[in-house]
Image (cartoon, rainbow, N blue to C red; front, side, top):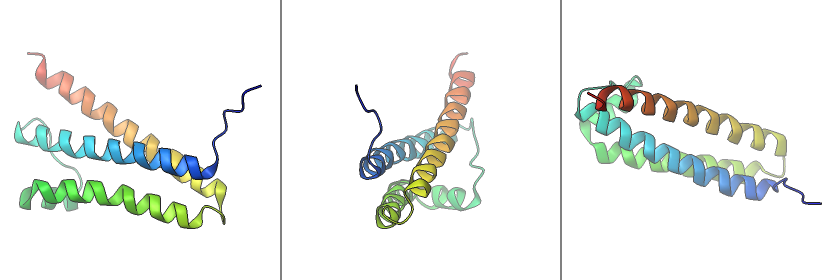
Length: 111
């Protein structure tokens, strides 16, 4: 019988890579959409970063998942359930953000 449960270590590595990819995609799609005037950034901090430097936004989008993965790695032996739930929540939120991005792309590219 095949056991599909991943160790917490593997969950952190795989989850962090997925969060990183989703975060970078979110940043790139946000910049793309704002350049075309089809969306606005709802987060005032990210709006400021985009207006100052899109590269700065992408640096933050790269750094935050790395910090999250590092923090989860440090607490992995103290609270395995919290690690799994935290990763699941972050992946859910980013998945919803990607659905929103796909929605406005579909609305604004199919003329």
